[in-house]
Amino acid sequence: MDAPDDFYADPKSMFEAMAAGNPNLPVPVFLSFQQAKAKAKQYSHDIFTAQRALVNILDRHEETVIKRWQKKTTVQRQKLLTTAFPAIPPTHRPDFWAIRKESTPQRRAGTLFRDHWLLPSLNLEDLSKPRNLLLFLRSRTRNPPGEFVNADANSVHIGHTAQALMPPYLSGYTMLLAGQNTQLSYGRMLSWDEDDEAFDMMSSGTGLQPGEGLQVLEIQQRKMQFLQKCIELILHDLPLHDHNIPKQPEPPEDRLQGNSPGQEIEKRLTGYTEDHIWSLREDPSYFQEIVLEWSEHRQERILTASGKSHPVLRQDLFWERVLSNVVVDAYTYFVAWDILAKEIDRVKLTKSNCHDQVGSGGELPEDTAQALAHFEHLINQLTKGPLGNWKVTR
Image 1 (cartoon, rainbow, N blue to C red):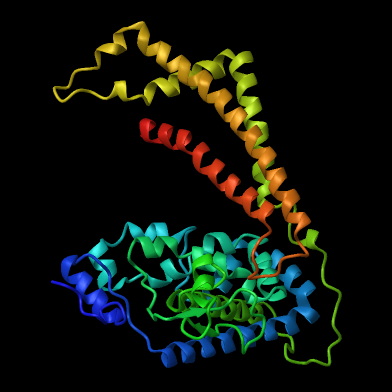
Image 2: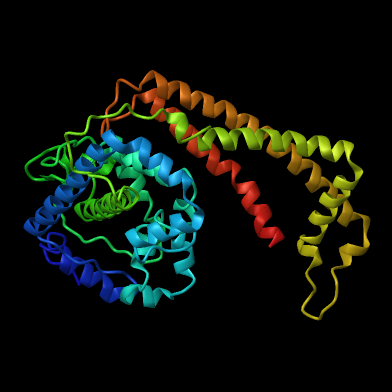
């Protein structure tokens, strides 16, 4: 049967028709333009109100916040975080934890762990460490919320894939967040009918589908309000709203962090791959340990359906395969990381060259976009080997 002329103009009917043919297809909540606009306006107000409050507090008390937080024990930090967010998950990546607790039909019917999916970065294991909350606080306070749009949108990928989260839907509009640095403009929507570039902005990633934008706004609202509660608890005995207190110099970055995570990873992997090869060559006990580990996790070790061992285990061919894996794997990782290190340097160079040319929400220069795309492709290709090894050894 042919679809009616207005089939695609009526998204609700379109989704319902598709769901009739595929019952597993999730159907979103549909919003009107006025509903989406009102939600975006409220979220934007809450985000910028919390940020202004945090700026005023940190301008006068950031040094005190750092000292008090770093003096607390892990138990004391966890108690404060739980007071600020009573339902805060205890473990790193709570979305991975939640995916094992519910079936897909249960998640679609209404997950019991929505905050685990929506706010995976808010958890006791990560934020009770000495530096993480301080870095989180400074970055979200000292930068406009539009700087974090992509990070916050990507943070709920597992929730979307697991069908635990479903953004509402509004067709015909693009929501702008990145590059919109005022409360009034943050979350504004452009009509596809009235703005020739509106749809292209959504397609290119400089804008968002309104439902996805509202989800990002909710995430940012929750995070900013959480940080505000944490600061109020840390500085519970100080007059936080007294603007007559003079502003203090901003504490230097090294008070909060040493090497960046990228630098730490680069340093550790470079050293590990080289040390691994030298240990294989120079340390017989290490060589024996690695060879036996590889041999224990090969598929040939799996018994047949009748409970018999694989015939190749009694042949030299088995150990030839194991030794080949050990040597090839060691040098492959070494060469792969050398290639990645050079690509990282290339990305850093192009990024530094265009730092002053592109604002939040703007398009990247062609050489920078190509460098990032090439780096992403390289990562995807180089991870296939380790992932393949993981599957074989598991």
